[in-house]
Image (cartoon, rainbow, N blue to C red; front, side, top):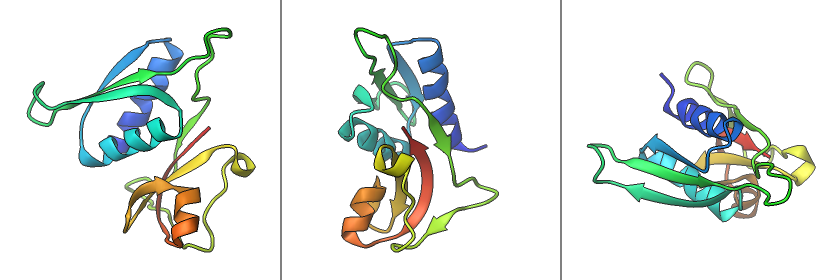
Length: 131
C-alpha cells in the first residue's frame, strides 16, 4: 500500500473523468504535495477537512482550460516507490521536460520542487514528476 501512489492515482482518475473536485484521505505528506501543486498552478484550490474522519480529507478543485477543457495536469508520474526509493543529491536534481514540468522532492527542509531545492542546495527523495 503506497499512499502517495493512491493520491496520484485519484488525481489522474478524476482528471480523466473530468471531475471538478476530488476527495482524498489526508496525511501530512499529501497536504504538502497539494500545497506545492497549488503554488505552481496545477490545481485551482484545495481545502483540508479535518472533521470528516479521524485522519481527515483533502478536497482538491482541479484546474481546466475554459476553452479547450484540457486539464492543467497532463501527466503525474510516481518516481520513488516503497520497494525502490529514488534519492538524488543537490548536484544531480532532475529536470522535467527540460524545465517545463516540476519534480516534487521530500527534503530535510520540507516538500518542495526541484527548482527550489536547487536554490537551497539540498537533495532528497524524488516523489513524483508533474507536467
